Length: 282
Ligand SMILES: NC(=O)c1ccc[n+]([C@@H]2O[C@H](COP(=O)([O-])OP(=O)(O)OC[C@H]3O[C@@H](n4cnc5c(N)ncnc54)[C@H](OP(=O)(O)O)[C@@H]3O)[C@@H](O)[C@H]2O)c1
Image (cartoon, rainbow, N blue to C red; front, side, top):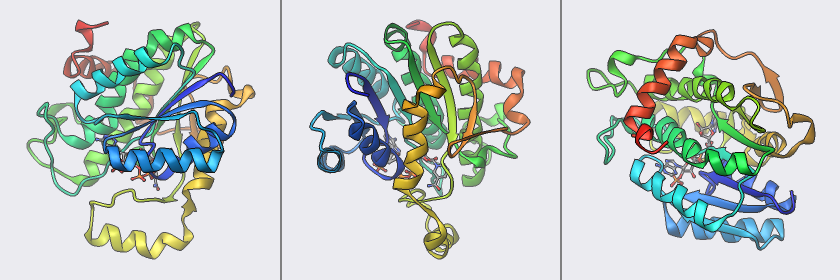
């Protein structure tokens, strides 16, 4: 991966941080995105130390804020003349309905809209660096979910479970729709369920969720092990042509029936483009 540039959102903790270590060990230039400068700087130093690669940088951005995402994309374009791997990994699971600076429900905004906008704003640079790859970190939690277009932001009724599961289905629908648009460009996009992993994920949930995570902890996969699949998807030569696929760990698998709903994918794209005001810039 020497000479290649990899951008990892949510790179200050969990699976994202370990994937950054793995890619840096392979010689890549790595930029991690963190919303918190202090946490991000500590993570960047740890990644440099573990990988023995000094070429690891921190970019500070909040994926739930569309202006912050635009600023992030601008910084990436100014700082790096190429972009080979974009890993859309940051994610959140919140117990209560939180409204972002843009007035959007925070789980949908962070897990889907922020990454939708980031990927689109960086597409030209990815195309110019082809062959290049985008990996969206989704979850098996997408199974059984549907996109509630009538109440996308859960203004009528909020369910933490529904918000997270819907956002992870959005990751898969977005992957498949983007893959179609990218055919023939040399840029590929795939999505990954990393497994059930012992990280700080869902740390805000409290209650039964936290008790369950504590009990299950010893049986969960380590972030380091889970990150191997991300590094594989981002670097392995045999996956250079894989496009529009769902992976569970390192194996290609079938995603849910709902994730193949073409009408839902097109509608989600259109709504996301409007909410992120993408159409005015692309
Ligand atoms: N752990 C699992 O079992 C599991 C299973 C399936 C899928 N996943 C997916 O794996 C991905 C990584 O999760 P993880 O398990 O590694 O958990 P994690 O350690 O909590 O990592 C999540 C990362 O996302 C960042 N993040 C959250 N909201 C953000 C925002 N608004 N702006 C910027 N960054 C933000 C977090 O930053 P802070 O440190 O500032 O919060 C953190 O760096 C997520 O997309 C999750 O849905 C995890």
